[in-house]
Each structure stands twice: as structure tokens, then as C-alpha cells.
Image (cartoon, rainbow, N blue to C red; front, side, top):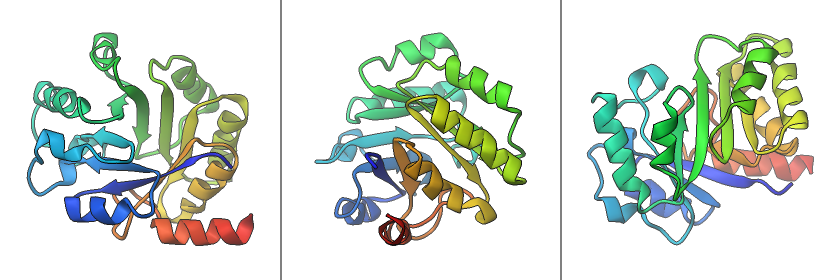
Length: 203
């Protein structure tokens, strides 16, 4: 198992704590109580910068132009940047100095497998992240197929009853597993202490 443990943080207090246990720190800028100074997000471990709109499960309330401008500013101090897959090609070109995680979120369902394949094959980022709402085991089989047929795919099902898919996906080769320190930043997200304990028992 060669993947990285990513811890999502919403404050510098959490970032300080996460540094002791995570491989990568994801700064969810939209969840901070106020916008942090750009250079403060640069740490001794790799950093992902993410700013989510409400319709994508986040809290950012400005327009997309403002959001992308902030992402560009923060990206100068980060290693990775998370960009939604619906963004235009020219947006991705602006972040070519970063490693890009191209993300697809669906909070209603898991689309058919062919739709997911189109997303993976059409990616413009270094990684593609697929997080969809789980309904039944057929949805998980779609995720398993993606992980076994493609490289650099981060894929799992959202929802409390499908939290386990995050761990299984990591075992199957997902290059990253997104964790939290305490409160989940997404439906079904597990804390890193629980994740590492489960993995230790399983492997």
C-alpha cells in the first residue's frame, strides 16, 4: 500500500496537529473562519488547496471568478490544487505549475460506469477524484472497476453507511485517502486515527 494519508483542515490549529500524523495537508479554505494569509499555508509537508462552493459541498459564497482568483493566489504556496471537473480547459492551464486533482462530486447518486469512465479518460489533472453518493453495492462495484482499470484515480462512495469504501479503495490502490481529525468535512469522511487503526488490523 503506497498511498498517502490526506488530512482535511479548517484552521491552523488543526494543521499543526495534522502535521504530526498526515502525509499531505488539505487546506479547505472555504471552511476557515476567515481567509488565511497566503504564505501561511506553506508547510514542511505537501499541501493541497481547495475552495468549495455550496453546490459542491462547501461554504464559499462568492462568485467563481473570485474563487478561482483566490485559488490561484494560494496555489503559489501549495503543491496541489483541487479543481472541479466542470471547469474549462483554460482554467487548468493557469495551474500548470501545481499538481492538479481534478474532482467530480455527486451528492445525489453514482452515475453509470460509462459516465465515470468518460470523466476519468477526459481528465486534465494529474489525478482524478470521484466522490459520489452510494445507494447499493452495485455503486461500489463501479468504484472497484475504476480503481482496477485506471491509474491515479481517487474514488469512493459518500455517506455514513459507505465510509468503509474509503478504506477499501485505499487498499485497492487509490493514491490518497482523505481523512479528518474530528468533524468530517464531507459525508462519511473518517478520522485519521480510526483509519490507521483499521488498516493496521487488516494488513
